[in-house]
Image 1: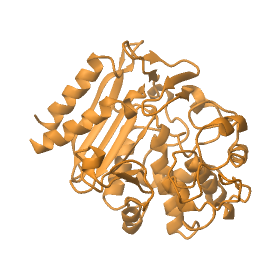
Image 2: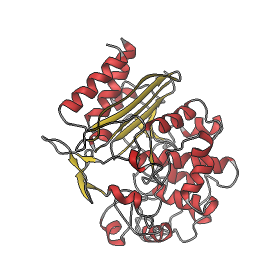
Image 3: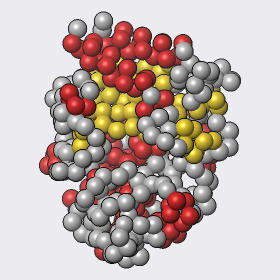
Image 4: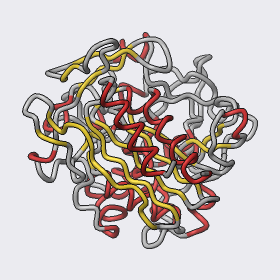
Length: 374
């Protein structure tokens, strides 16, 4: 079965069993698109078909964009990977798990090894905001609250997926500001011509509704604030889709962006091709390697500056070769770049959390590799 036929079958099956509402998928090999389709509904209730230029809430698709912005500042000599965060944010001094002072450096933020948490009793008690649920906190105030929450581990001694990229956003705003969005436009989206990607919506008519998992029935349209059970762990994720319209909400470097599949595909292809005009090849090469050393994240997968890195395909249970880098966005998205086979894939849906960590994106991935193998 060809790649196109395989992906069509996966998408058709997922729409048929109402696992997702709509999707936009772009896959290329050697820079040549071999699959580029929108499917399902953009707005199910109004019977509006999905469109290729739909604007999605990016969630953690925001992270590699912010990483690229930070690394551009490193190349310019305005930011150092080895510098302590306090060199740029003097007030950000969270205690270690034992209460003793801890030194977090910029590279810890990028690789999620600083111990900065994203939840838990102390986090909740501090009233820390994120990029998914609504908030009226400004960035400085949010980071001040986050600085009171003890770290999960000593910096460099573990891996925890928390609010490190929100802190990095604060660093970038302090170094290059005045806002994270303006810096993103200067260093990433502007040079690449990504007109629909940023922290504000370029065209509200192309930003559709979002839907939540509803096992055994059709996904539920999110209205107001909505809690969705995690797919890969306990607890729920709280979404407020209208957060993006709140001018008081801080620009979250970890999950606050919006953008389109074509824009994000262009960004990933820029990385695959070496980074120009936003980054140098050496920066991209080093940032797409596993930087965790002896720190264990999960079997067969480490982490770099832009996302997870496959280190052992057998242990990771993936057809992707070692060196593939990838990540997702909890609003319903996955992406990967396979530099060995020159494959770039962007999978975006309007269905949380299925499109991120449910069976759907894995089935699309498998259809891609089955199609090339056949």
